[in-house]
Amino acid sequence: MIEWKEMVWRPETETIPQPTPDLSWWTDAGLDHEAIVARFEPIGLDEMLAVALMDRYETKFVFHERRLGDILSALAGVYRVLEVNGTRFNRYSTLYIDSPGFDLYRRHQAGGRNGYKARGRYYLDAGISFLEVKHKVKANRTVKSRIEIADVGSQLGGDLSPDLLGFLAGHLPGDAAALEPKLWNDYTRITLVHLESAERVTIDLNLKFRSGEETVIVPDIVVAEVKRGRDQSNSPFMAVMKAGQIRSTSFSKYCIGVSMLYPEIKHNRFKTRLSMMSKIIHGEDYHVN
Image (cartoon, rainbow, N blue to C red; front, side, top):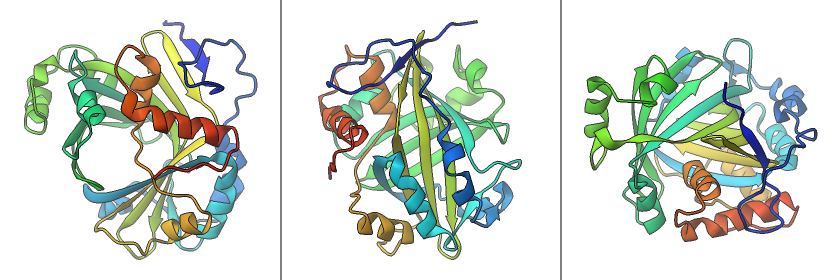
């Protein structure tokens, strides 16, 4: 069994964090908000397929976890919450794949709207896995394609099967056969589904990034994303964000993870996001457009 070298991101500076053995302060954020989330009516996986939103407009927000209780309290009765096998705090594990030279990451580093991500995602509580490609076609519009797979680690950890190669080649630029594992990202997710509109909100907590024998845990940060069938501004969640003076921001968990665990890879474009996270963790009133 691999013994992961745990690192907690303590952002006193903008340097890559150093290892620390003390994780005693870390708690499961889901337990803190369980009573509030219990106020929401549940929705199951089958019913949520009606709002799969594979072609959608995305708006992201990043804020301190201490604000989540008030935000959720304001939304009860407007959204339902995804419940899978009795839990509303669902665990996700994602393996990002990229070329040996990080070509997909570098497209994001270079800027522009025609970006791609390729990943295997394991929904731990549902017991299902998918190979997914996300294509950012313009500023806030993303098209996601996916196929179900048996296992993320074994099927993406070595040579890709002809079926997976065919899927990737049909949705990505470059040589699909050259793609290799780069980064694991684990987190806990609350998924809200609007009662009437084609809108979902995902709220991610307990962010963790893994590569090789190193792990980085990012404390206190919440990454929320509004996914809508069309570009519109009358989202109740976005209204709560505006009332709380939490501005939207671009944010890629893959790019942030690469910036932290691959310091030799150029990441100038993401330094403002790392600075934003640092200031949020330190309790400063800091937002970035």
